[in-house]
Figure 1 (tube, rainbow, N blue to C red):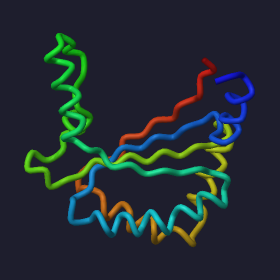
Figure 2 (figure 1 turned 60 degrees about the horizontal axis):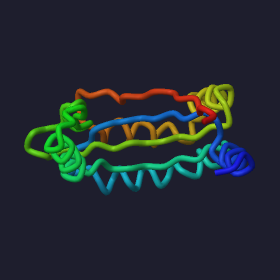
Figure 3 (figure 1 turned 60 degrees about the vertical axis):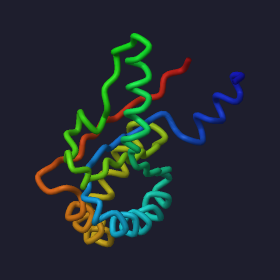
Length: 145
């Protein structure tokens, strides 16, 4: 990737990433998808690109097992780290929110806390994630490499 391509990618995605990991009961899958579909336009209107992913534990474990078989016991599963239910009744989801910069993230978060039009969607979301759990989140700044 040349310098211009890197700059264009930076403009498209921004330099700030907020990542969230959370667990949800499998029975809430469809309701959570519908909830997120309703939230995406709000974020887009704020200039935020948002994406959702679901962890594929079996695929992850296969990669970890393969590494161990080759003498690299350096990885562990996110599902294990987040202590998902052993009976696999829960799913691990990841949400990625891309902002122009940290100030943009702060601005959007402040708007979200004040916007009563999405309050019910937020409440619904927190009712759909696994009870007794918290969202694991982190803010990341893009590195120029």
